Length: 338
Figure (cartoon, rainbow, N blue to C red):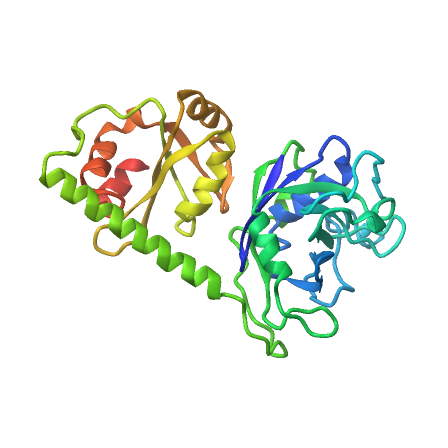
């Protein structure tokens, strides 16, 4: 049971304690589903202690629980679920930033060090960062003003629910947006956006893809590329109906929960470079591929319900992928994939 938080400093995966804290984790999962946290600031940072986020107003005074959207203003807050077995004893612990006893809404904390014992018994621990601790460390190093607000805005840019054990309550579907909300910077927000790292990563990934494609062409020319007519391996999955905004990196993070991913390539049009909305994901083992196949088919990724099958079902597309690489697709390939 987990959620992927895409931030302006990198991606974070939070594993949730759904059994121990069902009310709190359900609130978090459903807020993520309605994109409540998209573009929300990390508005308060206490270096080497905690960082706080989850307030759309960015002031630390706002925020609503999912129950307020479903049941009205009287349900804005919900009760604590403090468990003695769950403590703030490791970096990356995620807990509610409550306004007082039984006053939990949407704001939450992430610890920036081990042994934050002062928070135990006061804040409901409901998750832990399982991937992206380097991102937590990068956030901890942000330069802040006297109130602990970073001089450069660090935001949750997007959320992806990886696994949700709770059924959607009545009324939720009506408030789930058709697409992710567009970021609009407020007129009073004069601080720079902390996008520098993300841009650098995009450039690095583009360079890596180009290098990979060039290497494949060279190997084919010298006859060292495996037979393109060979059947796709049993460890490879075909994923289609992707959202054009989904990146190779996001897809790899999502599928790597089932085992080691060897390659994860979204196929792009050879002229425009645009995503053709399908990809090939190859695992190190057949067992990992089978686990992902059974769990990921019809799952929502970036607001699109994807279809997952074994690559052997799409031999022609696989053959083109092996011959021309990730940027050798055509519009006809995209139509065939769907």
